[in-house]
Amino acid sequence: MWNYEKRLQYPLKIKQCNPKIAQIIISQYGGPDGELGASMRYLSQRYTMPYPEIAGLLTDIGTEELAHFEMIGAIVYQLTKDLTPEEIKNSGFAPYYVDHTLALWPQAAGGIPFNACEFQSKGDVITDLNEDLAAEQKARTTYDNILRLVDDPDVCDAIRFLRAREIVHYQRFGEALRLAAEKLDEKNFYAFNPEFDS
Image 1 (cartoon, rainbow, N blue to C red):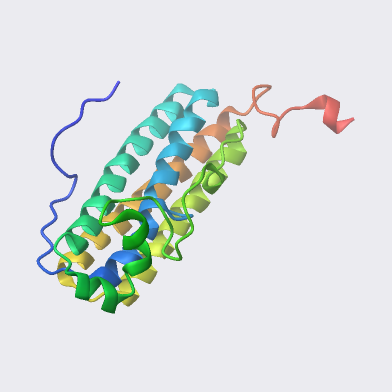
Image 2 (image 1 turned 90 degrees about the horizontal axis):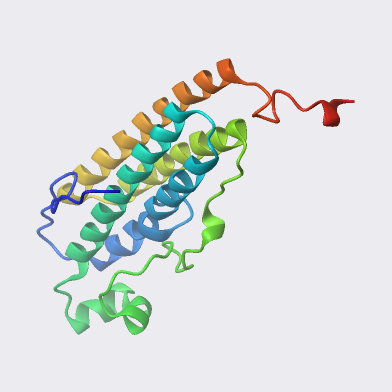
């Protein structure tokens, strides 16, 4: 069960509309390496994690990723909320606007909608934790790419915060992988599965 605090994890006050930036940022809302996929990945993997401390970590990070999903939504909203029809037409935002007006909808920067194929939950400790490590690095790289393309200081400040959290999550999953490696036994096919090894 979750308790929701009516505040963003990191404060956002974007002063200027910019639909071109919104089109880039939205990839972290529902793109292949975005926050929605990250949250669903970790909150799904926790059920088959045999080690309670790592299942707890998956719950914690999955919950934080929901907070990041909310932050990305707030960024995109603040970048688009006061757009004029002229700005929509001139910015290339019109195709999104036709389908969604100014509502938030999970998609990649290229317009591809989010689907559950964006994340993996395999039920194997080693497989899932390596998936998680890779996912955090892909998200960090996406934030790096955003920072290369965006020059709005209000947006960049929030993106730097999110990028730093990806690094922390990567470190935590690295610790979890080391802990799991110490505990490998018959619960994990990677370590023990005689019917496959004979």
